[in-house]
Image (cartoon, rainbow, N blue to C red; front, side):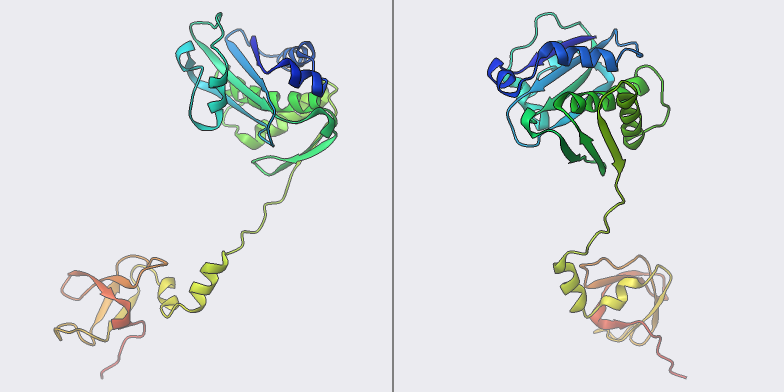
Length: 256
C-alpha cells in the first residue's frame, strides 16, 4: 500500500499529529488485507467537521483522475500530483479536519451511527477501516453483499481488536416529521380525500360542459399527485381524460 499525506507542517505541529504514527495506524489496520494495489491519500486540513472517507474501488484509478476540482474532494487540486503514483490503482481518500484537542469526542456519521473516539488516532483507525471494508469487498471479493452498516460494524470490531479506544452503536432511525408547509397544505386541501384513491376506484363526473359524461361513472387510472388539481380517469367509452377534481366526486350517483 502506498500512502500519501496532504497537509502542512504547521497544522501537524499545532495538533500534535505525527505522520509516522498515522502511517503505522493505516498499516496496522490493513495488515490482514492484500493492499498491494491500494493507494491511500490522507488529507489533514483545517476545516469544520469535514471528516469523511471515500473508497474508489469499483474501477481502476489512474494518475490522470487522482486530482479533481469538483465535488466533496475538490480540495485535492490544492496539492501537486505525486510523482510516483502507479499506472493504475484502487484509491481510498480520508479527510480529517478534527483538531487534536477536541478529543475525546462523539460523532454521528452519515449512516446514523454514533461513535466515541478517545483520540485523533482512534478516529483515523475506524474511518480508514470502514473504507478498507469496501476495498476488501470490491477488490478482494470479501464481504459479499455487505453495505455501509456492515462496514461500520467491521471497522468498529477491527479497531477494537487492535486496541484502539473507540465505541460505536447504530442509533434508532428518527421519525420523519412532515414539513409544516405540507401539513398546512393538507389541512386546507379541498381535495385531500382524492389523494387516497387507488387505480381502479370509481368516481362520478358531476360537471361536463359538453354534457357527454355528466353523472356517469369513471375509473381512476393512476393515483392523484399531492399537488395536482386533476385526476386521470377513463370514461365508459374507453377514453382517457385529465379531469378537474372540482368536477368529480368519489361517491357514485345512484339515479335509479
